[in-house]
Length: 379
Image 1 (tube, rainbow, N blue to C red):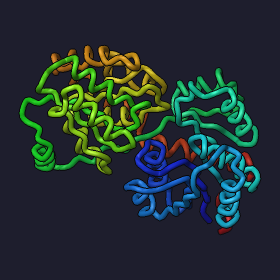
Image 2: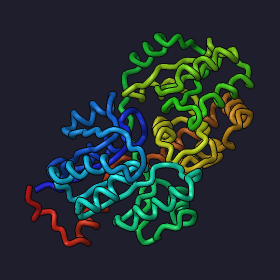
Image 3: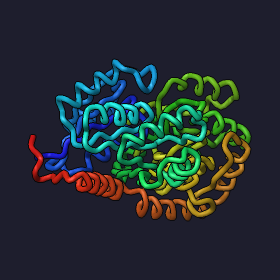
Image 4: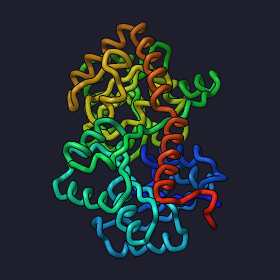
């Protein structure tokens, strides 16, 4: 008697999309919903957490292109056996699966979700996305900037666009003693100023080296740079820190399933992305009452209120980052004020409970429109 939802995403590793899927699956009533996830690859802590929630993960390998016949054939087999009422796809590969396989497989509700900052998307990709939406029910935009792109640049049907912000759980805090031990283990000293960032180490997008360049400009040995995350460019970023003389100030701890303890070590949070559909880690930092310095791109410019919860800076501008880090270092009261305002904004607008409620309401609305009554479902 459950609503069966087949989620389609690309890789399940350490990214924001899979984090949000985990939040959703934990937040929806297990007595009402059953979930499976089809993906291109899975591994790591988030994958393990999803399995612990009872979710089957089905990796099918990478798509060569959106219309990859053999990959869609695999998805269709999954649809046939699982018989989902809803197929919900995020990222381009996931939208491809949800639209094409969902349509051919006769899934009643087909939902697309635009989670990226798609400003660099080609005209061909925009045309393909339009085709996807023609055979789907709705597309979710995760931020006002993404919704604006979908309506104005991609010129998708406004009737099929819905805005639902991602959601973040309230932090679970460890004891003060645990945090003290972590500080000691990382070699942090009294008086150190911790500039933190969290994310997948893919430097072309996340621009961690811009943060390093900003710290180099400030030239203050008491500043430490703490980066939480893993990815293909972790060695490159560490090597860059050494190259510019910041090796003794740079701390890279890799992927951490519990990031909350690391946020608690930070004095200032910085995210320097070249583009960002939403910016989940900025919200996480705000939930930890941190002032946030963020690039004025994509969803970040919607999350961070300049001069209220932090500072917005141009992308690829280490000098601007440096100026604002220096301003916050010199003004602890401003850091505190930004942190409190950020926490209030994040709690009111970006909570996990609000996100799960909106997605659940969307599911039920679409089911009702199709005349599908949940309590008449058969297994």
